[in-house]
Image 1 (tube, rainbow, N blue to C red):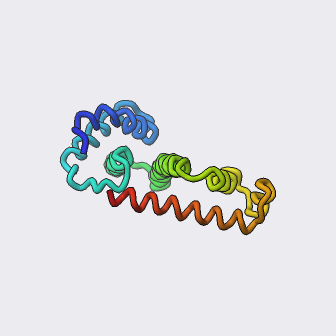
Image 2 (cartoon, rainbow, N blue to C red):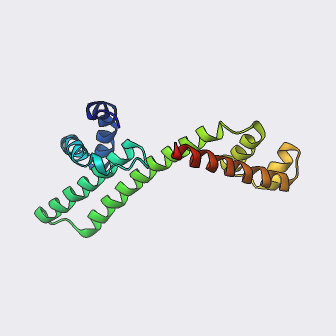
Image 3 (tube, one colour):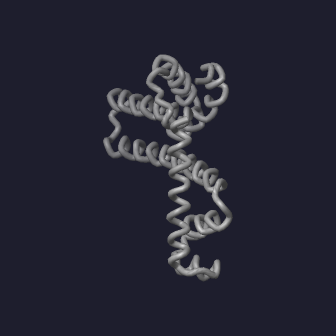
Length: 166
C-alpha cells in the first residue's frame, strides 16, 4: 500500500472532480474530498485491493454525498423525486468511471494477445461485428472467428486469474 500522502497527492484531484460533478458546488466538493480522505485513513485496513484505489475513494465520496443529501433533505423540504434524480446521476457518473477503467484494463490485456486474436477482439467489441462479418473481413470462416474470439477471452481470463494470484 502506498503512503497516504502519496495517495492524497495522486487521487485528491480525481475525488474532487468526481464530487464536483455530483454536487455542482466547489465548497461542498472540497469539504467532502477532505472528509473522504479522513475516512480512507481510518478505514485503510478495509481496502481489499480488488479495485483501484481511486474507485474505492470515489465509493467513499459517493456515500458521503448521499449522507449530505439526506442531511439537507432533513433541513430543507426537497422532494423525494429530486433526491432520487441526484442519486441516479451519481450512480451514472460512478458507472461511467468504472466502465472506463474496465475498458482500459481490457484493452491493455488485449495487447498481450497474438495479432489475429487481437484483431478479432477489436472487430467484435469495438466494431460490433458478428462472426460472419469478421470471417469475411479476415478471409476466414465464421466458425474460425467464433473460436478465435472464445480462445482470446479465455487467454485474457487466464492472464487476469494468474495475475491476481501473484
